[in-house]
Image (tube, rainbow, N blue to C red):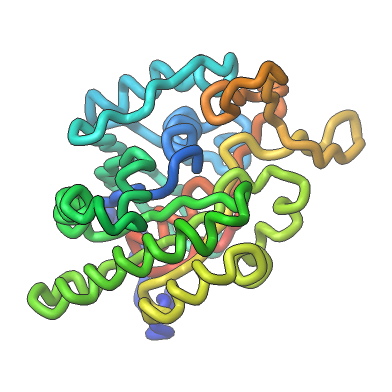
Length: 299
């Protein structure tokens, strides 16, 4: 069986594969990084029914702990403390993707670090150069980066995202001159929280309909700094939309944010647990690990 990877070279796919990867999840505060991981590790039964054989299995204590907390985070809006800088958890887990008519089965063995948003934001602040250097040294030990952004505050495009990524990718380019393996590091850029009404219809072509339109300066930096073979854009939603209920399509976000003035990052939770269908949780990880685009955008 043949497939095309991101460099348009045919790749022979075996009947069953196992691929390992070390990933850093980077992004601004309130971009939903930890909620994303909680959703991924707790994967809803409905999604498992749609993809028989799909499994996510924790292989580290940090991942097991997050699974234990995920139910309260997602279903009850329990407060999840932000990651402590310098003491980030290491989530290790396997994703078993079953064989389909479009692709062979594969198991992704992943080690993932989720960084506090402040570590990304300091890249845009010149006087925090020494702090940034500490973080980026660890990021450069990984094989892949997953950068999570939102467009809730449009001013972040020019004042935060673009300068931070410009500095981060400049550092990557400079280090690649002395460490050739870094010239192969892939970067998946993800628009999170795409259950919002104005984003949901655009999720199927995140590059053209989300990033190019909503984060123009950020998009330009990414395209200028990285070749197409190492850069890809995605959209994801940890909550999804209400979907089809009683034969009627309901496009409302399947999340509830209490109107009490609190930060929605920590108290948003599922509106209806039985209707939970997250979107795009696995596709970025699949591409980062294989260089191939997964055939079903629901994952």
